[in-house]
Image 1 (cartoon, one colour):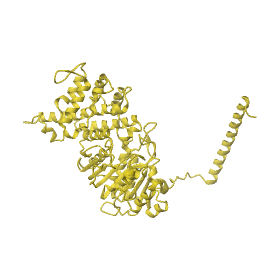
Image 2: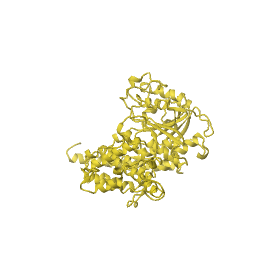
Image 3: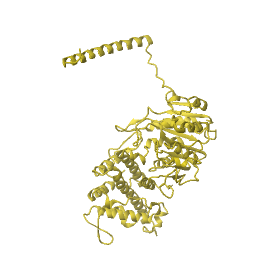
Image 4: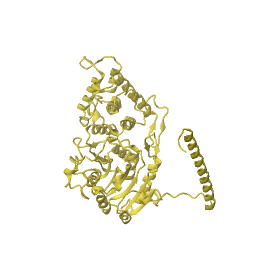
Length: 531
């Protein structure tokens, strides 16, 4: 825990510790003033990143001072242990000390602004660490936030400590970074959702797919949340960071840099391609066949250049509409799936039922190819970027029985989770740990995993449907079509007695309605209106 901020913590529905992170956020956000969240985000997250690499460097530095013949200033002693080399002028302790001064002297003795010192620190770090080239923010000297507020911000972020002996810097600072990403996404509204997928949604994807090992790919990776949760899942189940090879792509240059920073904090190696690039027109991993694909593509994008890609070989199930990229994303994902690969992705609810511009034909072809493994309808208010209802699609290259799964060929599981979730504020909802576990347990029981228990259809929640049943519904994949109505537990009251009671209640309501109607008419007559 951060020193001085340990008290008052509590758990939210997703298991994240609140209090520590919330206090940091409230303190940092207080300094924002009139600065737009989109700009302030880079100021804050850049400083958190600087704090992380300095803490990790200092931890290794202190260890080297205790080793005979080791040189704490030998760069190789750090890079060989996966620690970024932090030049002396970029180390947090020195910058925090300078931030408290009214005037700052640079290495050349000339007076410098605090923003200039921070920019130089970021440049020095990039020069010494090739994976960070062109990643870190270097606009502190031109920031809209005053020098005094940046100095106060440095003091606030400086309270994030290394924690106790059982905790590493990346665990704590990574948690803070993730929390701040979510808060900035909330503050930015629709545009913020472009780089952040709600944690509970990512967890559902990861818990169902279970990416223990192999190649994991996200063609629109945003700030890297899918990768973070995948690595977290591997570690939670006894694996090691590095058991999965991670590949991603992101077209927005700013978000691409955010992703690099987010993953670097956790020591996660990722191949994001040579540059930020459009997935449809400049695929950075054309030969990749991934074991797991997790994605949250932007919903219903109309201007994606589809007219120029009508003959693209990725459109195995039919050319996607030029006015909506949903099924372009879907077919791009399928084209990158390995022979026994699995995919899980988020799409707008319209993707489950639309028949416009050939979408229905594409969906039919996918169902008949036996690719659609599971469909999950999500509750509303989960996303920062949109109020459009969303769903989760899960695809499997093979549903045949193997050592882990039972034979589910020509079958699809439907889960209706629309009634789940708890409000965390007036506008946003999250799925709780228990709800995520219920969805995952249902899926794994259906797939036949021994430790998940026996599967059974639950009216109103889940249903295993055959391809013939789906065909009978016109290849519409909306779970509500299949799961039916939730069973209502009988209350034991005899029918005749219940009807008498309800009829009496209705008569009283009719009488009250008549009384109110007459009172309103009397008031209108008193005002000279009505008869």
